[in-house]
Length: 579
Image 1 (cartoon, rainbow, N blue to C red):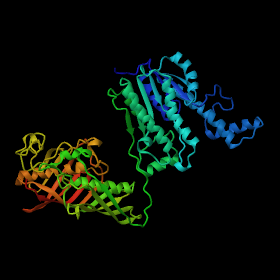
Image 2 (image 1 turned 90 degrees about the vertical axis):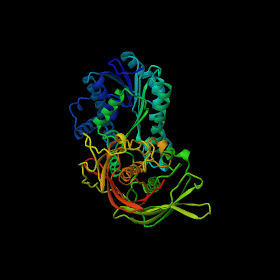
Image 3 (image 1 turned 90 degrees about the horizontal axis):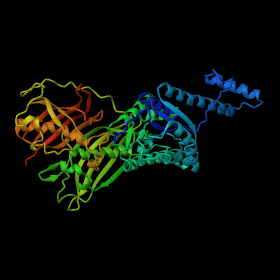
Image 4 (image 1 turned 30 degrees about the vertical axis):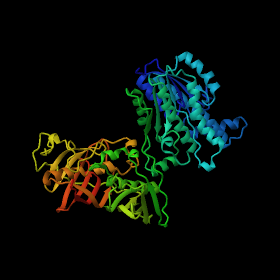
């Protein structure tokens, strides 16, 4: 069954008369001219006193409130004035919502009720349902905040936050027949997905909404169910102090009109198999002040094929082999996790000392040793020395990889690379792509030739724009793989799969000009200015620096079509591989 919103559709909306939920409801009304039952705790002032009418400035209205209180013989304390002001302004906001829905062609009724009170919900919603019709959709947008560090939270804080989300959902759903419900939209938060400082209760409540969406979707597959994990909006429950904190952490604020339209798009989507959607940039904890103490760390890791399915896409001479880029990612991700808010900028003198092969020599565990070499608050940078090693069969230390890594709080703007766009060195077709002999239809992975032994997790060379004896430019696209496939080596700021892919054009170059193959051995310097895109074309330009009978040294630049640099690799050394 495919559900569509009709003018006869009726949405029960908690928290729907004010804030961000209101903007979403109004946008739905503009799109579908349907009906709404809006639930909220605030009461509507049926008739404003004469002294408040036509007074819309906050200062002017508060002045009239004080005068009225004085005329009644009451003392106009700030608390009393604010209470009356909030009651009047809240009522006006609700009436404005109802008016805008009507102007959009929809119809709405407002019900003043606490969604955490099951009996009140049942009693007060019933008359509205009789007038508007049976409920076909639910939008649960109600919520409260009580942000405090966990050691300062009270039971009442937790109950206030938890109840609005969880009990509110339970009470709302208990009133509708899920067998006939067409839409269930839960306003969750990235706090439930990523976590957030001071919002333990809020994170718990929202994660329950996320899991509830999955459960309802499993049991009622025909219902369009989605928990939208919103990031912070321009309005809503984001205070100026919280907005500043978000800006310091590079978390984007969702504009009201953009977020409302995203909800409409989600409701209109024909394919609604996904029960949870995250609408935000990843939440990065604020970088803390660096102390002067230089620390050391030791991390132990077991490597198993069943935990890392992508290993089977990196098989050399019959054995799965850990890519050097994955060794880099283990080091980089560990460093970034130690210092949230900092990202890798460069890696120097990275060496492959002994590859990790899944054969009889595979160790029981591998060890990453990190040494902090320097920390500088003036430049917001940290440098590490790293080694990955294991105990060999003789119980002696055997080193596998080593290098130096620099993390920065702020990455410099990406430079521009001026690369050649004119094909050279071979025949070209009407699309101006180089046609390379021995690769039918430029299918570079068809026979696992030379360096291109890679399976789907790493594939992505599409075509060459230039292909000469000293340099080349290839168009690539990494399609991405599931998190389960990535195993212990997840894509974060550094993408080990796309970086490995970026060396594949060299394998094609080597096979074409010299009928040789090579494996990575050393890297003088790696620099990263931006993430390498996923499911989007990027370009790899290589320049041959030197070649001998033993090794080959190449510089790579990974960039977009305009030349914006994502990553640069200087002095990439490869050694001949005989197979």
